[in-house]
Amino acid sequence: MSSYLELTARECLARLFDAGSFEEFLPPSARVVSPHLGQLDAPVAFDDGVAVGRAQLAGQPVFCAAQEGGFMGGAVGEVHGAKLTGLLRRAVLEKAAAVVLLLESGGVRLHEANAGLIAVSEVMRALLDARAAGIPVIALVGGSNGCFGGMGIVARCANAVVMSEEGRLAMSGPEVIETASGVEEFDSRDRALVWRTTGGKHRYLMGDCQAIVPDEVQAFRMAAIAAIARTSAAGVELSLAALEAEQDLLSERIARFGGCADPLDAWRELGIPDPGAVPMMEADAFAALAASFTPGGAR
Image 1: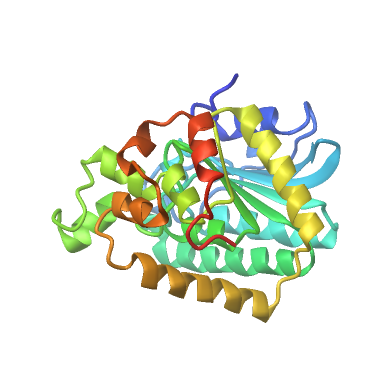
Image 2 (image 1 turned 135 degrees about the vertical axis):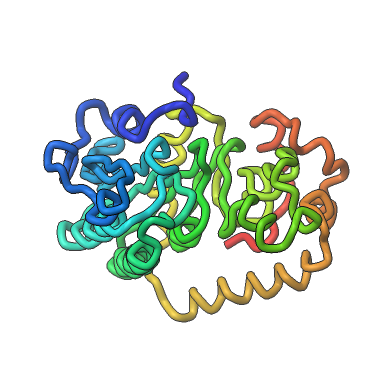
């Protein structure tokens, strides 16, 4: 089995979708680079750190994108964000069966912060427009850089999020929290704390992701297929009532877990008899545990 975590963006695209089916829009040969990085004498990439295009997934025509964590940690700049926005808009025009986003990003590039922030907001709008048009949007999170900052918000705008235990998902990264609030608030060097706070198991238990899979490309592939089928069957209409229902879930989560100082406390509140054993559980054992109760704030 191939480790999802260890693959580059294009390797993931080649192995996740039907063999030979990925067709890239604006490939590196088009040399579409950031207009800002060169002015700062920063290195550029000819794809600006993201590959976008169309592919087949179990025979279904889907649009897809993969952020390259090896280039600036997958951080979003003007061109990077514009490629994601254009992909989502084109998916609506061509009535794709779904959009699958392979997200790996530390957030917005400091080099082009304002442009990057605007770009992320445009990605979010385009994603919600795709959902409103009846196109399921599935986010996969399993790269070594995690999914933080604006892209963490983008992930939670999707119909479903699929994560591995090794994946991480949050608004602010551990180092950002520590810098802003001090090591007493969050020690970014405590890797066990980081993973049980932002990692896949905690996100699943809290209802922030809808499936957790082993660190294998094939497992992500099967989970993406299942998520598309489940979302399509349930209906993907984006309504004000649905958004308000999700907001209510967040309010309930604050009331229930707001006093928890550590994810272990939240897991105990969920009814897990031995929270300390959760981080060491293998995927099958964790799946059996998770099936025994309703995740906090689940959709």
